[in-house]
Length: 114
Image 1: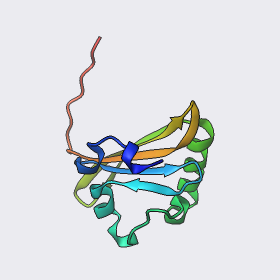
Image 2: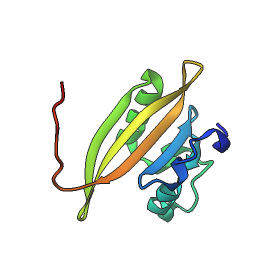
Image 3: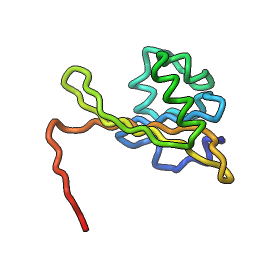
Image 4: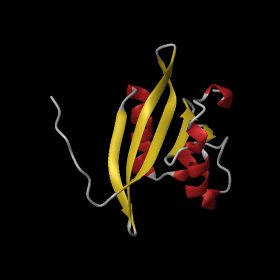
């Protein structure tokens, strides 16, 4: 995936966006993702599996196999985040994964719409 084909807004949004290809090679990290993951240096081009434990590696493999979605919240210190991981496709075939990580408030409104 060429970074020139990414949406123009991806690099300057307040969410951390990380993209890997079907071989788990990190092909894109926006500025926020690079800041969040600075302790790893620049992992672009490296295998995503290098940075995850056994449980997470299993989830990544499942998402690549099924084309599915994994969504959850985490808390580190006082910061709460929602993590949304999804397969992305090219020509109908799973081509990799995208992870969007966004900070969320302690209390969030929830609306039920019909």
